[in-house]
Image 1 (spheres, helix red, strand yellow):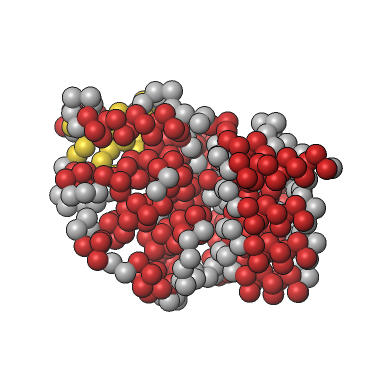
Image 2: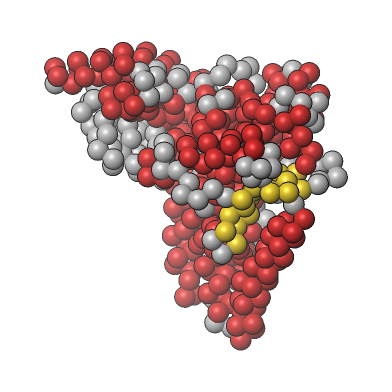
Length: 425
């Protein structure tokens, strides 16, 4: 699978949105510094200092770490090659193992076109305790960072990374994306959730954790400092990451993580105030106003999308009754009906269709809800969408139909249904 055929549902809905926000913020910062004499000295430092630190880090890893190769842990090397082939890598990144003093972690790095994945030794020792599947998830997660060019993008938005909330928000969205991609390319959601549980409690006790109780416990925590702890972190809370994987694969859970509106209010306020302080005044005032108005409009339309993506049926039904537009879409073109289909929630999909949701709307890649249902093998949702007026003849940007995706993924019964309906149109 190459980057052009990457399933758009693997990319978290907020990743691109936060990247654009961080990029706009960074451009304002660069322009503000560029017009000042002091800025002429600061900009080179902002660019060269992180590159220098990155070069030193990679040099230290290459000289001290153990590189995975055909002769060094060959079974892990074979796994890396297999996952890279699935993800469409033209060159397999170097993978190193480093002693970690008890820290369970891994990270991806890049310097002038050279990619690297680093595994801390305490995590790598999973291969000795029956945790090879969980280790594969971790490796694939880091490969996903490289595949999505997250490391290069972070250099572009470097100023935003120093400002609270903006850089962290983008980083958290990237983590959700990489979790999805890793679960998808390993085809092992259980190992994905186990891998995240290991990061919470360790590589021995994770097997004794009641995952459902763990998620319920975390979902009940609230308050200002709980919110701040999450929003000032580059990684989402581990229970939320596990919950996101459950939602992605359609697993049942009684835990519900509710989104807090205070976050968006604080974030928008902080962005507007800080940009006003560092901008050059009237020259950019119109641009700032337009940006905040666009974000405000997006926020008002996000309630239905948020409820749908969270699997909150009651919330969706309530918003529809209050007059919310069932066809509202985010920047990627995803609608509530697409999320309902992705989550295999036919009851929610039925409610949206009854409220007037258009089953033939396409996202930025040309995907329709019918393609999502067909690609995931959901026969009931496919039938529901067809009954609701979905057109099986629509093609995406790759000139693929819903039937093509069903055949590609081995769902012959769905492909036959779609072809039969298509012939009748």
